[in-house]
Each structure stands twice: as structure tokens, then as C-alpha cells.
Image (cartoon, rainbow, N blue to C red; front, top):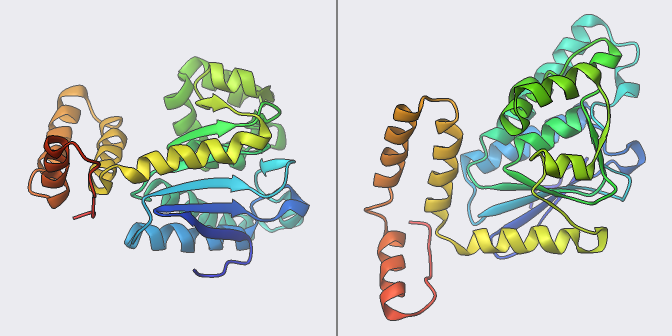
Length: 263
């Protein structure tokens, strides 16, 4: 496993990787090094996930999942330096969106600004009841620039997203759940177990089928319904000649658990 300065990444059970943002002294805020580490990790997984079938992304400590960009690092930056850093941030979020296997956010604490955008870039999320969320950028003279204006409306609808983004108002975990931002609220001591249980269930399924289904969902949201249905069939048909498809049918008829090999 590659060592990362700002991340703790490990395989915790067959097919499941846990990645922890590891700057607890700074509320796991995203600095340039963390962005570079995440680009490297996500890009490697996009190129070849290997045995990884699902990922759980969380933060170190109990205070924060991710507090957003590290504003102490940004203090005094020139305009050019700020924009150059943001290019690295953009690459990180794009690389996360392009990871072919599912990524579950286990939100162990507050997710503000770029931290909430990171959660939005994951496939779904579980959170502790004490977590708070916000896109605070307009209170700082900027705006969400890592997917917030695009991913948030897709999750909660246009009018709710405008309220969240234009006020910059923090909101709680129950609101996040009710609005569809997080799937479940889980007490802190059970959060990781819940996320890993979901990851294990995903990892038990046919990996090629899971990847194709994720791809179809993502692509379909960018298309009209007719085009989305055509994309779905194309994704489906690529699974027909796979050994996993044949194994799934054999296992069903033999009344046993399938042994999917990802081919």
C-alpha cells in the first residue's frame, strides 16, 4: 500500500478499502498536499482498482470529516497561487468522481465547504447525528468551486440548493438526512461498522456489474430519459458475455453463493 502524507489508506476486509483524511489537528482541512495525495490515490484506483471493490472515505478524529479548504494555508496567497492551488483541488474532485468502484462517505464530523463537496462526490453517505454541514463560500467572498453548485441541486433540488448555497447557513444531520444528502444517521460508535457492512455487501456482488450500474446512473443523470435508457442497455449488454454473469446464473440454479471473479 502506498504511503500518503495526509491520508491513512488500508484494506480492511476483502475487497474493501478504508481511506481516512488524516489532518485532525486542522479539522482534516484540504491543503495542497492532501489534494495531491487524493489525486494520486483516486487516479491510481481509476486506472486499476485491482482487488478493491468498494471504498469507505472518512475523517480522522471526532471533530470533522473535512472542514473544507485550509484557509490558514491560503492566507496571503497571490491570485495566481490561489488559482494554481485550486486547479489541484479541481483535479482531486474530478478524480474522485471518476473512481469506477463505489465510494461511501462515513461522515464522522462536520463537513463544511469543500468537505461537503467531497461528500457529495461520493456515491452515498452515512453520518453521525452530531455532524453539521454547510457551503459557506459566499460568506468568504467566493462560491462553491468543486462541484457544489452542480452536485447539490442534483441531490436536494434546485430551490433547496439555492437556499443552502446563497445563505451559507449551516444545518444539522437530521436536515441533511431529510433532504437526501445523507442516507442514514448512525451513532458514532457504530458509524464505521455500518459503512463497512454496506461496503462488504457491495463487495460481495459482481464487481463488473456494480461498476457498470454506477456508470449508468452517473451518465444517465446527464442525459434525457430516452438517451439514458439507451446508455443503460449498452452498459447491460457488456455484462452478458462475462464469466461473472454465467457464474451468477449457475450459483442461483445450484442454490449456492456465487464466486465472482471480476471477469
